[in-house]
Every structure is written in structure tokens, then in C-alpha cells.
Length: 463
Image (cartoon, rainbow, N blue to C red; front, side, top):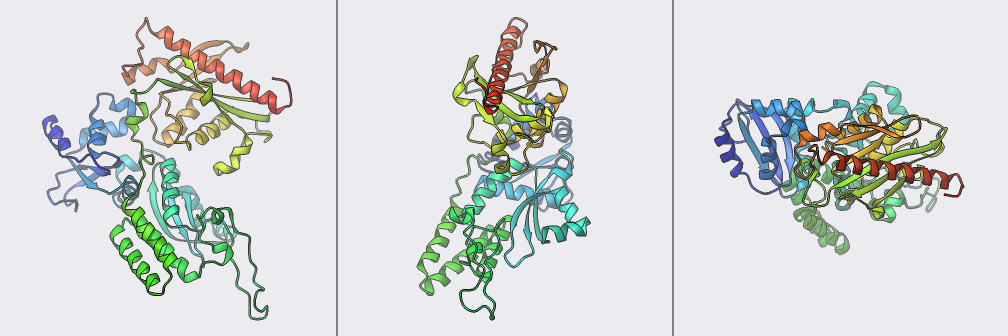
């Protein structure tokens, strides 16, 4: 496509949330895609700004060769406007599943894609699973018996796990569902009234995110309606979903169950006014230079695999920002959703610890985004940090500080590649390079000092 034609097409895109598609072959018939092949599907908070970002000079360094190839081959751009970023996220997953665009499916390992699944149980669970987990379930009969469930519906793939996690928080507030708790068991005729096995309310029930499956507050039929609503939402069938809810609301009002009718009315309002600005941050905004230049540095400390801890320190415009320093210990591992290698696991593996620390840090969308990440170590440490960022589709450069046997810095790996980003504020001219080296070394020294201090504190020594 010619530059003038691209510019004209981009100018017609709305500054609104939605999904965009790069096509190979012209497509005169709306979105039926006759005679055209979908090369890539993406989502955006602003369709115009997002599509425009693909035509920056540094597209290869920020998005990689696969996207660069796609840009050189496309003939047309189509879009679907949505009412919210959350709906754009769901629609993107449905379109990727439908068209299997090469630039999407090959952009990362297919087995690491995330899916939302609904289990085949009396009170189905709504879970997030990776492709490899689902594949294992279907290929290994023992997995079914061990987990005591099968899958009836699958939605996805969702390329970004962090965005899906935020999306599920929004969905669950609208439609509370079961994920872990044990359903309340009604008494058998032989037991008599009041002899059922009543569980204590699960944590999610206590905060309103479980409808009371564990306490017998919801019937199988009522819960089935919730699952139907969730299904319609993940199928991007919002119109039918709202009609269903309106029908349910009228039914409750007719039977004078006004509290339940009011809850559905609130859900309908939420669906039409979803506040999800924090859900989707386009890749280009990860290097927002309107704010201070932020460097985050990471380090691990332990003694032969005991009291393993990780830390994050922050330098903004050359100044330490201790209020943003963070500690990572075994305490937060299970809450993050997996087994931790921190603490007294006995595992002596700094790269695994770094993987966990950065993964846990990326769940905190409320923290300011860094412009540069510094890690203590060599190529292996640098590679693991880049892998985590790549899996989450985040484009932040990483440098590593290599030390000698006396733990003195001797080299900074990756600093030369920062010039490819052409970030105006990151002046890497010969005269300014020393300034950035000093900031990187300061960040690294702070991380090392903070990690050692935290580790010693846990060992009960005086810091």
C-alpha cells in the first residue's frame, strides 16, 4: 500500500477502542473478508493512534521482524469499533481463533497462549489455563481423573496474560463465578433436614466474587444462567447478553425479588459503561517520555538456596526513589498463583528467581512503567528478563551489569542496542554515554545493597 493511501486510511480511523486487522488482498465487502487473508489482528484503546504506530521508523526494533514483514505485505486495513477496551480484548481473541493470522500465532509459542475455560460440572468453574495445560488434559486421561473435571467451552487465545488477568477481574465483578471452592451438598433423604455438608464461605464469597456456590445460596439453575451470561460475553454477543439480562430482571421484578432485579440492573449499567482504561496499555505507551525517565533494577540474594529474596529499586532522572523500592519474598508466591522459588526452596537458580520476581512485578499495573530495566548478572539473566517481557508483549529494553570475581562491574550488556530505539530523551551520544552508564550502575548498586540487606534481615542478622 502506498504511503499516501496509508495516511488517508489512518486518518479515517476513529479515536476509540476496537480491533483492527491487516489484510493481504483488497476487501471491498465490509468484514466478510472475501478474497482477503488476515495477516494480523490487534486491539487498541485508540484505533487511529495504535494503527499509526505501526508505521514508525523503529518498528522492527520495537515489534520485531514478524510484524515488520507483515507491514511490508498488507494491502488493506479493516476495523471493528467496540464500546470498551475489555470488549476489544475479547473480540481480538475470537478473531485470532477464527482467522489464525500468521503474525499473531507465530509471534509467540502457541503453547503459552492463555484461554478462559468453563468446566463440565454441576456448578462449572471458570478458569484461566494455558494452551499446554489444556492439551495435556485432552491427551492424558489421567489428568482428567486427577483434576476431576473436563472442559465444555474454551475461549481464546489471549496473547497477553496480564491483560487477561485484569479483564477477568472486571468480568467477575459483573458475573460472580466459582473457581476453587467446593459446592454446598444438599442433604440426602436419609439424613433429614439440616444434615447437608455446609462449607464455610470461601474468600471470594466473602468479597462478593463467588455467588455462594459453597454456601448453598444459589441453585444449579440460577448458576447456569450466570454461566450462560459469561459465555455470551466471551462470544462477543453483547446484544443477546443484555436482552437475556433484561429478561431476567423483569422476571425478578415480577416475582417481587427486587434486590436481585436491582443487581441485574447494575450489571446492565456496568456493561454499558465499562471503566477499563487501565486494562490495555498499547505497546507504544510503554515508553511514555512525557514523564520522568524511570530505571528499574532487579537483584536476587540468598545463601545456598535459603532465604532467597528478590528486590526492585528505582532511579528517576538520575535520583534514587526509595518510596518505589519493592521486596519480593516467598510470602507473595502463592498469592501470585504458583509455587515460589523464593524463601527456603533449596533451589539455587537466580534466573528462575528473576523470572518469578519480574512476573510478579508485572501484575502491578498501578505501578509506574519503567523506560529501562537493569538486571545484575550476565547474558542468562538478561535473556530471562527479556523472555518475560516478550511473553507479555511489553517492549522495554533490558541491560545487565556483568561483575568480576570481586563483584566489581566490568561490562554493561545491551547498552549499545538502546541507540536503535531512537528515544530522544535517552541521549546515547559519545559525550552523554557516561551519564547513562552511571545511572545504570547506580541502579544496580542500589538493587544489590537492598537485596543483601533484605536477605540478612530475614536471616535475623543486624543490617
